[in-house]
Image (cartoon, rainbow, N blue to C red; front, side):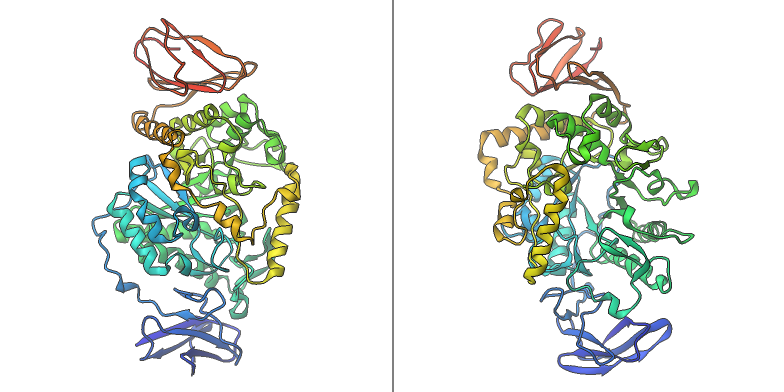
Length: 574
C-alpha cells in the first residue's frame, strides 16, 4: 500500500494517473489531496492530473527516470542498506572542501564514477566533498542550477540508489558530503509548480524571474516544500550538509526569514540523528546576518562564501581588471582579504553604487569559505579557463599556498590540485533548440562586461563543450601534474599545524611582495617582476619552495619573480 499526496489548493479535481489508470484523489485539509493504492510499489510510474488535464510529474517526485518531462517513479527510501551507522558527521572547523561536478569528474559521469576516485581524495587530504546540484534538470548534461524536480536525484548520474551508494562510500572513507541546492529559482524546463499552487511570488523577482513565494498567500506550504526538501537530503541520503545557492536571491519579508526557519529545523534534525549537519550560504553580498547566531539577530547558518577573497587574489595574480575585477588588483586589498576574509564591509560599494556588506568581526574565520577557483569563477569565463590557463606555475603555487595557509575554510575545485588542463565550460542539453539558442545568446551578452568577444563563447548545447570539460585523469602520470599534486598534498599536511593562529600580513605594493605570518609559519610571495632578496632570521627553516633555485644562504633568500616560499621560524622572524 502506498499513499500519494499532493498540494493543489486551487483545483476542483485531482486524479492520480498510475499505470494508465486514473484514481480520484480525496480533498483533504489545507489544499492537500490524497489517495492510497495497493498496487503502487517501488518502480511504478505515476503522475497527477489537474482538473482533467495531462498527467504532470509529482512536485515532490523522488525519481524522474525519463527526465523532468516524464512521469514520476515510486521510490522506497528504506530499501537501501546503510553501512554508516557509526558516522557522526564532521564539524566545519578544520574542514577542507572539494567541489566537484558529477558529470565531468569521472569518465562515466555518475555517482559511482565519483566513488571510484575516493582514494585520490583521501590521499589529497580533503575532508569533505561538495557535489554541485544533482536535482533533476533538463536533459542529460548541465551544471544543475536549473533543476525542476528538486526531490529527485538526477537519473543520468545514477538516481537515488547511486547517490546513496556514493554517500555511504564517502563516509566509509572518512569523507563528509555537502550537497549544493538551489532554493532561489527553478529551471525553465519541467517547472510545473505554478499549475499546482502559488509557488511563485507576484511581488518579488530575481535575476531568473519570479521569486519563490516565501512570504505571500500560500507561502506556508511553499516554505514547507523547500524545508522538507532540505531535510530529505539529510535524513534519507545521509548528506552532511547543504550549500545554499545565491541566498541573496531568496526574497522573504516575513518576521522569521526562510533561512532562519531552515537553520532551526536542520539543527533539530541533526540533533535527532546524532550527526553534525552544516548549512553554507553562497552569496555575493558580505552580510554577517547569514551566519550570525540567532540569539544575536542572525539566521544561524554555519558559513558563508567570500567572493572578495577570490576576486582580490585572482586580480592580483592575473592582472585582470574587467567586469567585477575592476575594483580589485592591489596588494592592499589582497592583504585585507587575507586578514579579514571580506573587503567590503559597509562603505558605499563602487561595484554596485550601494551600501554593501556588514562588519564580520563576530564571525569565526572558519565560517568563511574561500577558494582560488570554483565552478562559478572558472565556468563563467567565456572559455571556462582555469587559473592555470592564465598564469604561470609560480603564480599557481602562490594561490594554493595562500589558500591553504589562510584561517578560513578552503575550497578546492575539481582538478585544481593537479593543475588540470581541462576547462570547465557552461554546457546544457535542452531538447528545445530555441531555448538552447536563447541561453547561448544570453551568456554572450553577459560576457560583454568582461570584453570577451561572442565568438569566444562555446555553444553550451554542443556535446563537445561538455566533453572538453571532463577531467583527464591520465594527466596524473605526467611530471608537472604530479608535482602540482604533491604541492597541494604538502600544503594540506602543513595546514594541520597552523591551528587557530591569527594572520599577520606585510605588503610592499611597489615591488609586489607579500609576507603572511601565522604562528611560527611565514609565507613569502614575490608577485612582482624582479627578484626579491630578503633577510631572514638565523632560526628560519625552509619548509617548501616553489622553485628549486630558492635556497637559504646565510641569513638571506633570493626569490625569483612569481615565486613563494614557506618558512618555519624558531628563533628569529623575517
